[in-house]
Structures are given as C-alpha cells and as structure tokens.
Image 1 (cartoon, rainbow, N blue to C red):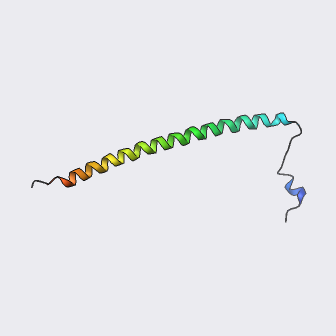
Image 2 (cartoon, helix red, strand yellow; image 1 turned 30 degrees about the horizontal axis):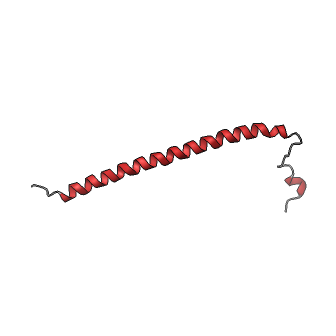
Image 3 (cartoon, one colour; image 1 turned 60 degrees about the vertical axis):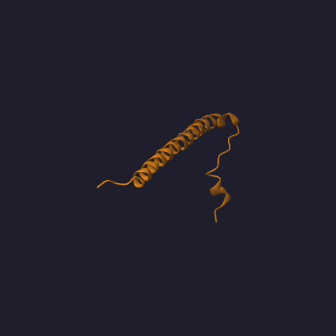
Length: 69
C-alpha cells in the first residue's frame, strides 16, 4: 500500500494557475490534430470501401458473362 507522501510525489497542483496555460495550449493543439486525423481516416476509409465495392461489382459482372472458349 502506498503512503500518501509517496503518491504526492506524482501530483503537482500549482498555486499560480497561469502555469496551466501552456498545458492547455499543447492539449488543444494535440486534440485538434487528433480530430483532423480521425476525420481523415474516416474519409479515406469510405473512399477505400467504395473502391472495394466497385471492384467487387466488376468481378461479379465478369463471373456472370459466359466465357468463350
């Protein structure tokens, strides 16, 4: 079991609240970057799914046409 004095080494709450500003700025930057990255991944995934669907339809069309041998 941890003593409270040991746990207090990992926690730091500054008296001057202006020390939170750099953390807020960096958090905002990374959060915005994460949102844009997620949107990019979703859009790219939709495009790839559409390409896969078109490819699947082409394969089905090729299967349905009789082969002349």
